[in-house]
Amino acid sequence: MVGPVQGADAAPNQTIYVSNLNEKIKKEEMKKSLYAVFSQFGKILDIVNLKTLKLRGQAWVVFDDITAATNALRQMQGFPFYDKPMKIAYAKTKSDAVSKADGTFVPREKRKAIEEREKEKARKRAAAAGPVPAALPGQMPGMMPGMVPGMVPPAYGYGMPPPMAVPEAPAPPNNLLFVENLPLEASKLMLSTLFNQFPGFKEVRMIESKPGIAFVEFSDENQSTVAMSGLQGYRITPTNPMLITYAKK
DNA sequence: AGCACA
Image 1 (cartoon, rainbow, N blue to C red):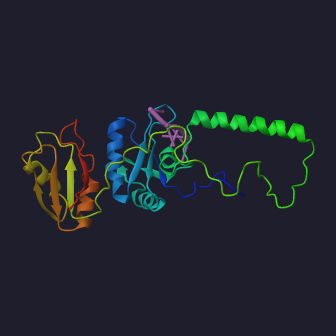
Image 2 (cartoon, rainbow, N blue to C red; image 1 turned 135 degrees about the horizontal axis):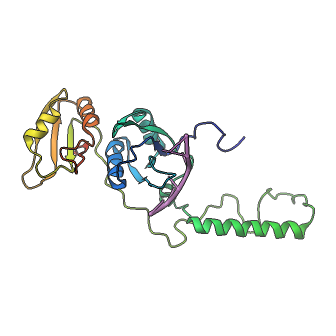
Image 3 (cartoon, rainbow, N blue to C red; image 1 turned 135 degrees about the vertical axis):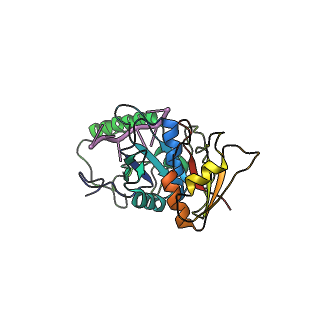
């Protein structure tokens, strides 16, 4: 049998479906925090988070490739995030961001229209031809006039814009953390106190001319990773959940 | 629980 099987998990996909998310968190914040937590696994093409009745508490994180998605799924399964354990599965279908990147994207309205047209053609053909004739020698079943084996859809048809701009590639895991979205009142002492709870803490560095960010150094990347998980989204003030990523070195 | 692309 072909296609998704009822009751089975979705097949591996470069998009993960994340559910059991805290519904109180606003969309923009949720996306930023998901980005902060998942970008360590690979390039993220898009994050979709809708708050409609049917879709709240869920998000789709679209990765560049399925290896990244698989690692994210395995490593972040059950990860406590805004006080709730994340539930992660592969998405059931291909994301638009992926279709846009590989040139196969067709807007939904057009997809519908095209389907209708194909159906209509099929009906007419069936009516005109009567009983199905045997295929001519050398003709492949299912081929239509004008079709050529191996034909592919046009890249970037339909006047679509190029794929969305993507945040620059995140740094690989390492011992130095980059902290952003800090409130102005965040001090070196506050941050040191906070990060010092985690083993391997070495120092906090802030830059006078760049408020809102800090670098936090640990002895090794395992230790920095633990601290990142522990403080991701932590609020020094109610308005600024901190965003922690690995620093570029 | 809920699988979309505002």
